[in-house]
Amino acid sequence: MLELPYLRAERADAEQRLSKRNIDAKSLVDKALALDEERRSSQNDLDGQQAELNNLSRSIGELMKAGRKEEAEAARARTSDLKATIQQLRDRMDAADQGLHEHLCTIPNAPLPVVPNGRSADDNTVVTQEGALPELPADAKPHWELGEAYGLLHMDLGVKLTGAGFPVYSGAGAKLQRALISFFLDRAIEAGYREIIPPHLVNEDSAFGTGQLPDKEGQMYTFEEEGKRLFLIPTAEVPITNLYRDMILEQDQLPIKMVGYTPCFRREAGSYGKDVRGLNRVHQFDKVEIVRIEHPDRSPAALEEMVEHVKGLLRALELPFRQLLLCGGDMGFSSAMTYDMEVYAGAQKRWLEVSSISTFTTYQSNRLKLRYRAEDKKPRLAHTLNGSALALARIVAALLENNQTPEGIRVPVALRPYTGFEMIRS
Image 1 (cartoon, rainbow, N blue to C red):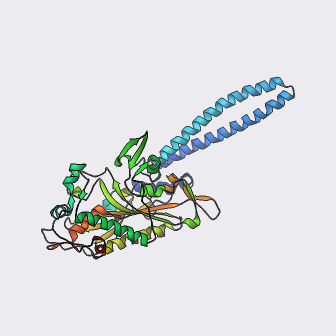
Image 2 (tube, one colour):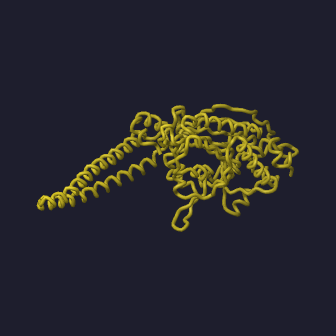
Image 3 (cartoon, rainbow, N blue to C red):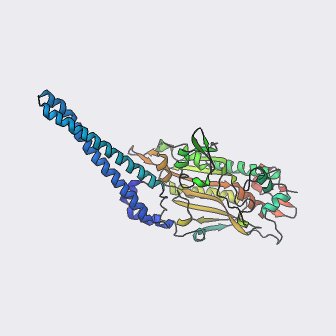
């Protein structure tokens, strides 16, 4: 959530930055500050009434000792009235506090000043593009046809077992998938990330902490367990970041760098059209995620380091890629700034997103109550960041399409120690 002190002290800045999301920023901020004022006013009134009650309670005994019984009885009557008023004020304050919390949960993160204005993906900025686009013959096959022809990928079997959007990999396709996971994990560990194997289910507190609730509730698979809701994770970011929920870290513990491989589950996949064929958009996919907890002064540099890490993976895979800076209208709810990395799929002649690398500044840590002890010994909110490094489904799609030859599908050199073969043959 956005921090209340920021909304109070930097109201104009908050409205200007939130407006990049093409929402009624003024109304959202106005309502938050009005609820905050109501809560604080109720607290002040409550404190005043409580102080009067405390003074009266102390005076009753003194009045009785002094033989001033009538005054003592009047004081008792007044304390009864004050107790009723205090309960009303407490109820009013609790309602205002709850209303403020619920309202703040509906306000997205404020985009950083560098984030461009825009309404959709068409308005994103291309920061850089690298690598030559593949030159394929006119009869080059898309990955879903290659997958079936070479016995690597079976979308129809996924429909049989579960439903649309649940692929089945077999043979060299399964080996390629496993090789990519190991390659991505090894590269991250070499870069100083600590490997985590988290649960694939999270509770409501965890989903709330990283911003999936309430914003993306409809995109997650959920079920009830002993009266509690559990969610299949949409990304390893959720359980890994929540490892540090409700914690105060020492400065020398920062940065914290973690990496985890998990399957990911999302209900957002579309159902028809060429843009969602094969692995372009699925309900279940594998992903290696890097997560960082940083001192606020270091988080901008950390974001750029994460981008360079992902670029290194794409270069090693010999995939042409481009880096996009997302506009305000295309950013995720919790993000303050996001870079997307896209690879080019030669047979489809289109760019596929394979990574989002984001900084959340204090938005997630405010929900998580994730703090560090500053030099003045006071707890301050840490910054959180994460990035896909990488999402496998579309990486597999691009690798299959771009590396098809008359002899078979070529495996990039960097992957060969993991696959054990140089070429996928029918």
